[in-house]
Image (cartoon, rainbow, N blue to C red; front, side, top):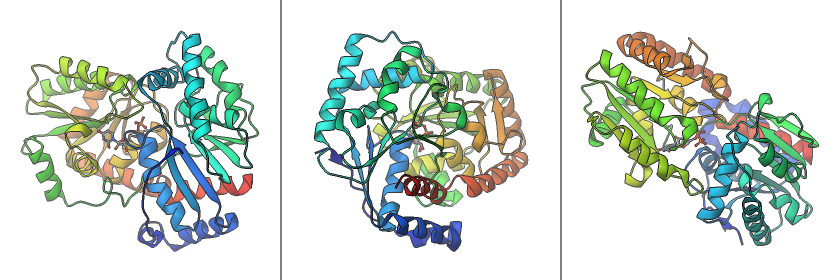
Length: 410
Ligand code: UDP
């Protein structure tokens, strides 16, 4: 059997105060049309990265709506995940010389995972490319199959895309975060655009008093009397962690007391993270006010929450980005964000309103320095950002959009 991720139960009623009764009624009505349907969400890792973050919150709420939702993860090892991370990068446009061995490894593990899929479901949602071929290898088994793409596939590497495309075209529906991400030649019966969302009640996003955040950040070794900027991201070249350090070095020339926290997580399906981590450590050598924290040394949801709240500005210097949950997470906390103009970030961050979209290290540093010097402006931007996230990027909206899709497929 594919490994089940245990997520327990949650009550929908707790969201009423945040999104209102009408929104919850709509969810109940949609779930009612699906009559206790069995839904499987399948992805590559139970921790690290945005997809596991989403499923951790989404699956218990689907259950609260009376649906028999499961979250399972595929089986894989370093060899397989090295291939799938290369595919992930290639689908976002990176060069990759696709080899026969890559294809064999990918298909071998997809075949094994397809065999492990023993239980029957009415809907099977497979996230991202790692297990995309399972639908083809398994046959439809009486289910409706959805491929949920979380990355920017607008200009995929042609070889990798040509290899994966037939597997994806076997699905009943494909879901993308933005219209621009749909590869031009994709032929799938049903295509839907659904941006992700954050869970306002999770330990990562729940309200935490400023003094508590200050104490958590202080405990981590930060001098809370001095300003701090933060980026929270997997250690991934597209998130440009070295660019963030370069921004910090420039900004520190203007604000000598400045500190930097790079908070990064390792994910089971991301072996590249370790190499980037070593590179970052090398690059920030001799910078006593730059800190690198990871989930391996105890930086978990509450600490991320505290850093996102306590920082004067949060950076998300992505070069390519699927959505970037961290942007909504930060804006929800009323903290202004300076972020790369990439992928799903402009959906969340209104340039000049809730922060700034930037295209270079210099521009990023300039915006960061300005916001640190004008905290009132930063606070007003943060407040505007929270409002925008409240309207568009909270979990009940995501569940509504996905249930609508399942209803139309049924
Ligand atoms: N995250 C975390 N700890 C870290 C780095 C990231 O908890 O050290 C979380 C982050 O808060 C967000 C998710 O991982 O919820 C990353 O999602 P995002 O969509 O920003 O990027 P992805 O990793 O999916 O590309």
